[in-house]
Amino acid sequence: MAAVDVIVNNLVTLWRIPAVRQNFHWIFLLISVAGSILKELQLVPQTYFSSSRNALNVYFVKVSWGWTLLLLTPFLLLSNSSFSRSAYFLGRRLLSLAVATAVWYVCTETFFYIEDATGSCFETDAMDVLKKEFTTKVSCRQAGFRWNGYDISGHSFILAYSALFIVEETAPMASLKTASVSPLPKLVLNLLYVALNLIVIIWVWMFACTSVYFHDPSHKLLGTVCALLGWHLTYRVWYLKPLSPGLPPHRHPKEQKQHA
Image 1 (cartoon, rainbow, N blue to C red):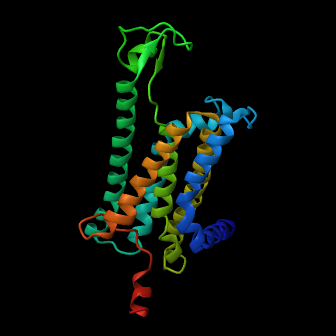
Image 2 (tube, helix red, strand yellow):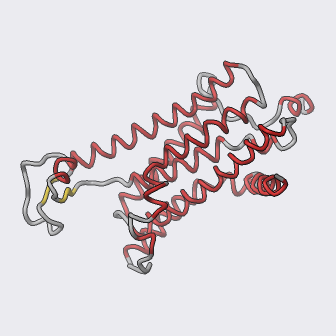
Image 3 (cartoon, rainbow, N blue to C red):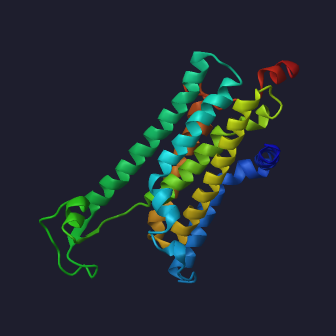
C-alpha cells in the first residue's frame, strides 16, 4: 500500500505541473503531424506494433471506450463523493460520462457514414474492378472485396479523446491527497487512479503507433482535431456554464473555507 501511495503522489505531482496539464492536448497534434511525416517518408521500420493484431490493439484499443468507462465510472463516484454526497452533485458529475459517450458515439457514427458515402467497392486492392452492387463497406467486406472511402481515423479520435477525458476527470486527486478518506475506499481509489494513468500511457503509445503505421495524413489529423474539439467544447466551454455537468471539483470543501 505504501508503494501505491508513492506512485499516486508522484503522478499527482506530475499532473499538477501547469505546463503538463495545460499543454497535454497539444501532444496529440504534434504526434499526429510528426508521425504522418515519418510514415510518408517511410522512416519507421516495421515492428510488432505495425500489425493491427498486436495485443494492445486487440484487447485494449478495439474496446478502448469500454476500458475508459470501466475504470473511470467507479473512480468518478468515489472521488466526487469525497467532496459531496449530494445526489444532485453526483448526478451532474455522472452526466459527464453520458456526455462523453454521446460525443464518442456521434463522432464514430459520423466517421462510418462519411466512409460509406464517399466510398466504392472494388474487387482487389488494385481498385481496377468496380463492384457496383455493393453500396456499403459492410456488405462489400462481407463479400470479400475492398472498400475505398474517406476513412477518418477512429483510432486517432478515440485514443486522444479518451486520454483527455481521463486526465480531466482524474484531476480531483490533487485535492484528495489531504482529504480524510477511509482506508479501503482510499486504496481502491488509489488503485483506480494508477490504472487510469496506465491506460492513458497505453492510449498515447497506441496513438503514436497509429500515426506512424496507419491511415493517410488527413485521416489522422481530422480524427485528432475532432477529439480536441470534443474535449474543448465540453471542458473548456460548456462545462463552465451553469446548465452543464460542471467541471470536476479541484478543492476540498474544508480547503475552500480556509481560502474564503
